[in-house]
Image 1 (cartoon, helix red, strand yellow):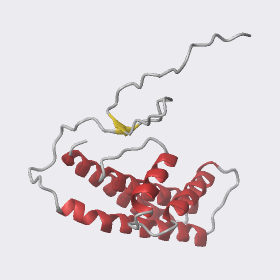
Image 2 (tube, helix red, strand yellow):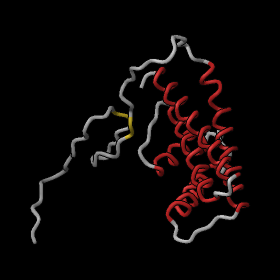
Image 3 (cartoon, helix red, strand yellow):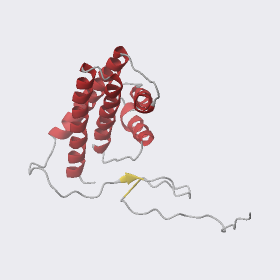
Image 4 (tube, one colour):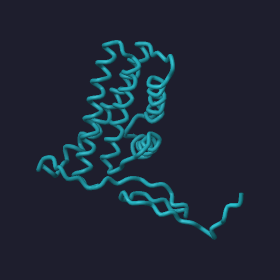
Length: 182
């Protein structure tokens, strides 16, 4: 992922986070507490993705997002301690709101999640402001983007593939191939 793509991807994710915050506010005002909780989580989720894109990282799972967020932003002190844990709690609240049978969030609970999400999105935006301001590219948006770089799991040989293009990972076997007996 080149610098231009990092900026475009981070900008897209941050804008999506802001739209979802507006949606959460509207839903809360309309008394749709479960939907507000869900939108609030997704706003924080996309703000976290914007932070990771600023480093050229893209993840495929909610757990992977939290792991990299802790490694690159919470531990170094760019995010308040406990942010990743609260993001996990917000995911659990979102899952309850979306999939729970007879689950109802009070207005106070929904307001708490929307307030936390707004703080998280604002913190991410403040952290990203210098990143966006330092843009050397003033040519405007491009319709051409390079393939995104993704983290891959361990190859099984003890090596961890850190960043690789979207190419298949060949399995690596150690020792002789064993036949299964039934």
